[in-house]
Length: 311
Image (cartoon, rainbow, N blue to C red; front, top):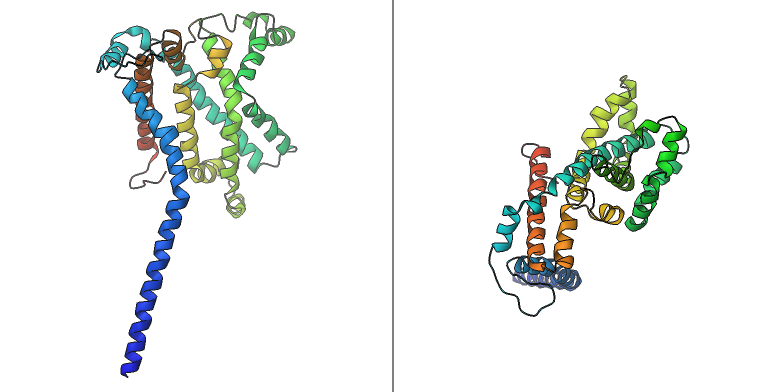
């Protein structure tokens, strides 16, 4: 009896030592495999962000060794000088465009996933293809497309809509809508592909049961598809709105921010590299960063259901 008790005690001790050794090996393995990505994250993400906050309280010009700390003077200048916030209304065009972009992407994703459309893979490729093109190339393409006497003017003339022809990139009332349309064309395919992946994850049995109950396509979309991909819609909307607040590539290439198309990011870049006021530009970047966080928080509050904290 005593021998059995000793044997059991020894076995329990061996199991404890073995379990402890296994747990130690797991911790070491996790640490070894995580240290490199964490180091890269700290080096290329958090360190630049920390430097940006530091530069925002200095008057650094971008190349001198001395950085005089001036406190919140850069932030005061941003909020007291109307020239810096005058460009923010331009973001409203892209904000409206982001909702149009999501709606179109969701429509095409639903049509190409649920309905039996011939050549659906071809249409998926056609819609997604603009996202693969470099933004600079897209800018030059649409500069020729929208120029006076260009492709768009020729098409409108052929269909008898010559009265609609205007200076698409020269008319202050139209230019931002033109640039917003280009952005929608470029990014809609990306949103569509994400929606298609989410829609295809819904079981086909759900659609079959809905059809047996007499649900039409709109009812299937409203009561099956939309609730099932709600979180994906939220994610895409968040990315689109954040992109609308930080538009740079398309308006910079096509108009260089002229004719009332300058965005806050273009203003920030010009402040840093054209006027050599990196400290002030860093403060502007911090302000944009905070605005994005606020918008993300509002979206989270709007979409989250009571008691549901999932992303």
